[in-house]
Image (cartoon, rainbow, N blue to C red):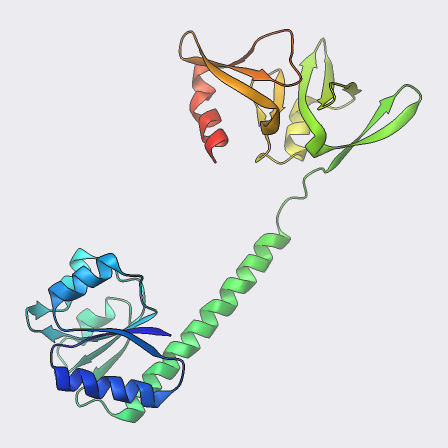
Length: 250
């Protein structure tokens, strides 16, 4: 655990370091700082610690000035000889408030509290991620299409685009093979991954991998060229340009 000590009295800092090291293995003291300014500079330029032990009254002012200048997202254990700052401390991300001289058992109890909170949030985060994965929509991986008297299965990743024409919906794969589908373009859009496919306009639903060129078009519109090529222009309206650019850049 990467731990930072902010304490302006060197004997107190050294004593705290020894007490932390005595409390258990796996704790690495990455730095000892002695002022508000040195703490601000360090936090601006270094990788964030996992835990901070912080004295409140430092040589150049109260430690609360640090939080006014830089972000300190990790938990804080405050160490101080004064009890009047506890309210300000707990308005920040404090997990404990230890009065000096810091007793070993109080220090170990604070570290145990940190470990308990860490395990709790790690467990809940894991459950959240598992739930998120479980609730992900199952996008269509294949389309069953008819070719002559036979039916064939086409992988969604091998589809270049879908388009609507004369009340029909056609699918074109990367081999430039065309198939007629008996489903609307809007329904197809709901079934396929929006990370890969985008509804360019009312007529075309295009795979990002099929887009070969994007160029400017009059009135702040865009024209998209695809592969396999098509005979008509594929135009993105001015209103849809920003959303299309976000999709392409995501």
